[in-house]
Image 1 (spheres, rainbow, N blue to C red):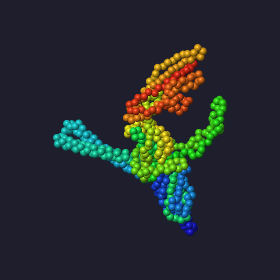
Image 2 (image 1 turned 60 degrees about the horizontal axis):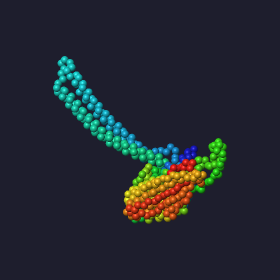
Image 3 (image 1 turned 90 degrees about the horizontal axis):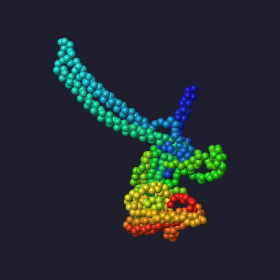
Image 4 (image 1 turned 60 degrees about the vertical axis):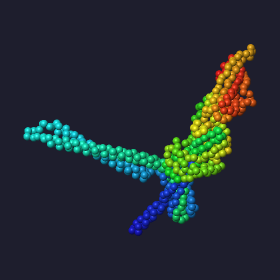
Length: 550
């Protein structure tokens, strides 16, 4: 019996030792981050000492919003061992972090200190009340003493001195305590702010990763852990600095980087990717387009929608699972060139140097590229719609990166002109940009005389004669190209005839003969004024009401 008990104790100790050896908490640091427009792939590295055989390496304080299907673990120094499994999860009934506990204890202690100061103030207030009560009592009883008793003037003076001294001391104590309480309140406010941030960090860093390994020998190993976080992204922002006199446009490419993972992205290497990590990579499926009678369709819409017409909403959402997602300027690496590489499906830009991106609700802006592009400038107006003239520029994207859809601040000759939106422009692709209104080109539109005549005895018709003069003045100090857009009406019925009188076809550019829209192009000298005339006749049945009215 004695030997059995000793054996049980020994086995229990062995199991306990083995269990403790199996659980290894890794200390890691973030090395690099591949940042996409809808997420970030974070790579952590660390060195741990592992035993022979099977064990589990635990990675604490990982972001809560992670993709559990995108976890990767790798050995870096090629040890003699295997990675059996890797998973990431949020444990139930998770305890508060040491930081939260320490701040809560600090807050409790500070509140006790404040309560003690309040007691001192209450005691001083009670001293004042006591002194005032004594003085009031003495005043009421003065002259009402019994036979054989007397109150001397010295007694009255002593009482007055006592009251004055007591009140002075109490008021001084109250003033001092009020100052101390105010200072304590400020400390409490700071602690509460820190506590709120710590609780928020706990909420953001609630995941734990566990990597099961099996080693042939014990020793130190280097391990890397990669995981995809959803609470991070980057969006492009641009600066367009146009100098029309020099025919150049300085293009500034910025990345507005946001991360609210709770992690400390300090001293990391950052790679910007132009694609989306969470976007569904499968080719979309085209479903049969079933047509039916309106009545029968409305009766069966809820029962047959998923079978014949299109997939259910949940399935469609699963097929297009895209996360949709102002700015502190960081000068890290501005003097060094951004490394750009291209793959089959995307581009990658490496921000030079080691940078810091705080976990915050706000974004931080980093300069990616800057280049001076050759540009062709002109001004364009559509006077039939509005008389404002817009400065335009034609450029070729000679940057190493594609210009992604995003907002740009446009500056002309160093002055902010407008905010514009850029579309996607691939490298070496040409595009036309809008740079805001051009106050140096004045456009006026004057309506000429209108004539409406009736004719015909059998085929009774009405003829409308319309003429519009578009006047343009160039107030630029140099020759400047202008484009004026106008239109002829188009007929949607064979009984309506449009006779185009001016401009002549050879004097304008017509991109589509069927929409009636044309463009004048001309270069005006400084202070030059020119008139561009649009005129046409419309013939239609007299008993018709032509719409819209002209």
